Image 1 (cartoon, rainbow, N blue to C red):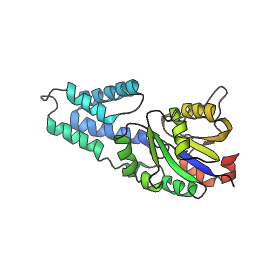
Image 2: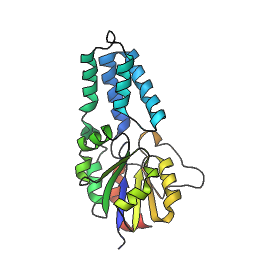
Image 3: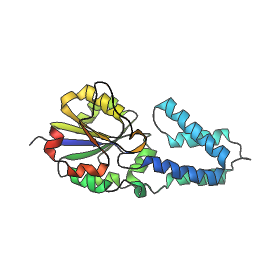
Image 4: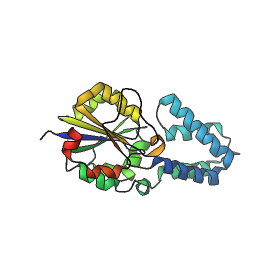
Length: 222
């Protein structure tokens, strides 16, 4: 049988990142109050627009630089920073996420391919037990679809399967890899209601990551 490699996203694919953000906001409201908490999220979005990825360490750094000590003292800032550094991501995995990775590993090689900053995103993946679930096969890029050659070189196979909650990423990858890849759109998170239009349609669409446990290798190869 043809060899399979599964390229699996993290945020809102294996891990409920929207819920994580809500939890963060609750902590920020308590620690900083509504005005500074709102400013944090403004900087969060500004950094994402600037860099094309979420970068929490840089967002916190900019918040510290522009906020007077009289408004946010260092002890409060360190407490807030600790909330992000020590967040229990393993509690926010989608139901049966680890079991799904274990099942896919019986069909082929599982690799986590995530967007994000190299430090915070890596800590998230380790803390959530996802790194262990794929035996340490973790790749983090600013824009994963721009590094397909590197991904293939590291993890060659007869066929690749990309699993993601963002149809725009799946579309970009399909244009480049065509029949060599099967795209799986997971309807979770803020893109769940998206209906891909135009020439692109995901090869497989599922409602929950756990649904992949019902698929055979042949279905992915089709």
